Length: 423
Image (tube, rainbow, N blue to C red):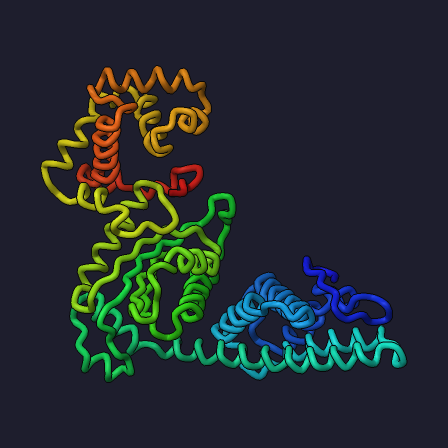
């Protein structure tokens, strides 16, 4: 099939698989663009390149949906892509009838292209099957687009919901306040803090912030709605989202997959943490997960880390003499930055000398020499379990405790790190 990676021929037309007979995605999107832009004021507000990208993505999703219907395959992914695109258009002010017309124009181009290749005698059964598929295709697209517009309308009018969310996070929400906004407070919540980080290799030197940032918010909100329905409460700003999801509408075992999906929706890497608490402890939990998120940022970790996974790091980040004492263990290594680098890599690779050597691009014997020097200088052997535990704690205390020396030293490591380090 042109402009597609799918090839699951089920029906043939003029002796060829139907999927090979479909028009190119670029042909369909070009015709939609020529009709859509001329009759829409949207082009004055949104760059033409962004419009073309959105239309091309929508056409690609419709072609994939057609292929999956013909192959009787799972249609969840292309329908989700169509839904995300419809939410974008709804936000940009495209009327729903214009959206339906653009999609129907694309379907008509596809169907007319197939009819033109059919032989009335031998392709009768194929055309009957194609008519059935296109009726189903039109029905599913109309449904998902309408639902997307309703979701965007609900989000646009969500001032009351935002007020309840803010009050719940601050510990001031009451059942009466929630009921007045049409919200029923749950008995317990899974509290998420998620930060979205640009892939360094995808960083745009001239990003259009006015378009990119709102689109990230809408894409993430759409994915949260898709995963949790309208039960989740969400606040997002400065690329950090705070989510409150009722426990009876979310399986904590699915947290990692959930984070992967919203990261994919945002087209970013994500670092995230979560904790489950009762409704009366939401405010404290919000503060706690954001503190853990800050620890992850300074440790240059991405992915999901549950609160219990970083409980030691969290405790060491609390004010007190113990953390300062642990951090001071590594003071003798200050004049030896290579040794500090080696220790950090060694602990990050679970104290495996061969992995440490690969990470540092040195010979394993060099790693052994440096580890022996660390033991000689600090009195703690990084190749023995007791030494590893104390050195790891000292390194964590040192890395997450630098903020006591001033705000400048707590600069976001993502800005200086060449790549984000997966945990």
